[in-house]
Length: 130
Image 1 (cartoon, rainbow, N blue to C red):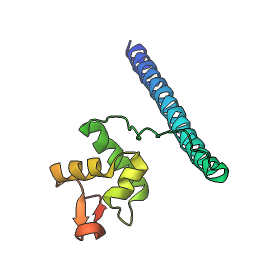
Image 2: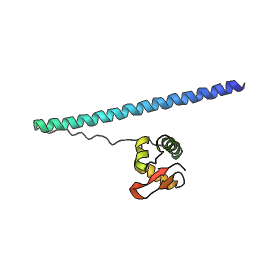
Image 3: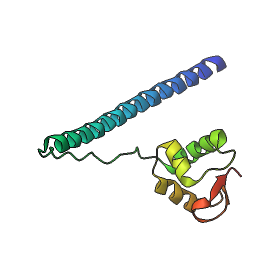
Image 4: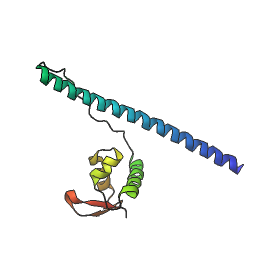
């Protein structure tokens, strides 16, 4: 009986991973569409400059990042710091690795001052694992 419960737990874990991978694939496709639209608008502006005709008004939508809970953010920051933070990272570098807004990371770190060890001040602040 113990092996069947562990098998069920493994199946549920694998299903959760499949859902996460599907979600990540959807987000990747959406970001590719946004990037393609930006490139298109740049090319339309170049065409308008060459032809002298006004380009169609196209404003690229702002980048929408998926909302993330503090617990999930904490886990992701730990993963990034473990993989890339040997020499320390600042908030912007962490945000770039997580595809999150730098202000979101900084606000989280201000709310959780003992989460990471800080060295320096201002823009040169480096964060390290405690």
